[in-house]
Image (tube, rainbow over all chains, first blue to last red; front, top):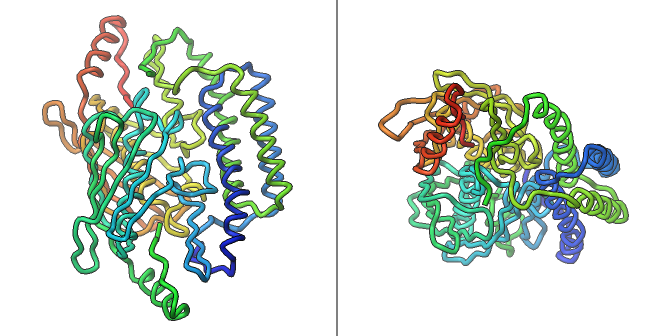
Length: 226
Length: 226
């Protein structure tokens, strides 16, 4: 199983990889949108499929054994590039570019297209849940209280239209190992979905954080467990 | 904006389209997995990206204007092929193949790979929420009470490992326009995430159902609003 991996990678190397893999994943997001919407003829569809399979085969010639996991370097820079919401390398992720401040706030502006549809023209209710789970967790992490989701409650105020959207979250309160976070998704007209969640740091993650802190004396421990 | 569209398409034509678009979308799911995991060199990555962009351009030569929506034929067969959880044509969807019975039960067995990761080696908590939103809605629809999500509550019992999983849902009770459904995600060891949700049929969907019923006298109205 994948783990939190510490790698000896410079910030420059991380930027180089981001510039390489980010556009590759973005090209697959565009392809996914086209696969949903295309009306070209059967021969073109067959040719597209053969072309895609050939590319996949070449990419698989050398690949990691499992999922991407989360990787940290000595500077504490975390890369959750396989993450289903924020993963730079993950074509399933929109991906969200999340902003934070240390008071425990997180926000992101993003676009959801045809691949995130539920009811016609609307964002799938579960996609809003997916995004809010991530955003509430990001807020908890930003406030120095990283954790995994314990409970999550969504209230759907109205349909969320596909298109330009914004999500926000912040820490509401902390009680022992539990961090309570709240947030919402909004379109230009206002809030469409509200969420509240409880985030808990599991024992194995506590140990990983402590180990990291011991090894890195002067470095801050990673704050996000996405 | 996309709508519920009724098309004059035979069951045979739907099967032909499924056999054409299903494998195309599946090829993009494999590609997405490879993009997350590949370790080939930079020149190969650049070549892959160029190849993907060329395929996308060809697919976009003729495409529908917006998202896929949900399409019904005269036999009441619904196609939510763009749906983010069950969409045959949507590479973001795993996709789930959901089984139903008319008592208001729904179940599915499925595999989640690297593209659905949150914490290392584990399914993103929000992906479980996404799947359970769909499953609870499917149960409500199967029991003749289709609706859109009003509220959804998730309880995370433990991490859900990437791999082979099962989800189940059923109608717990109906109160007027509200349908209460419950369900869970499980791995081979048992339940990992529990959910309960309230599904409500919005007015516009009520009108669409009534219109469909008037037009199709002898045909059952569509029962799923995914």
